[in-house]
Length: 86
Image 1: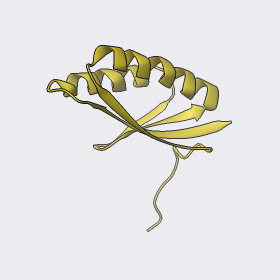
Image 2: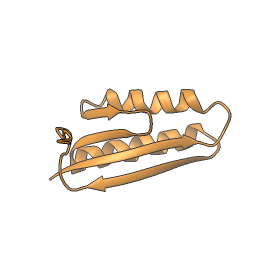
Image 3: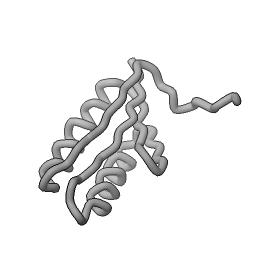
């Protein structure tokens, strides 16, 4: 089963930018489809692969920051090819 995940990582500390960049780079290195925009990052692929990756990388990111938040939305389909028609 394929899923699409939209997530935002928000470290609550002054040096937040490097932590966000490192998180996104690790997602990119996974081989899954990863698309970034200024507000969020989307990850697309097989449920088990995506969730396995997020479990590891979100934990790692939490361990690297004092306090951090993840905002996550998931849908049961691969929407990586979505193009607005308006």
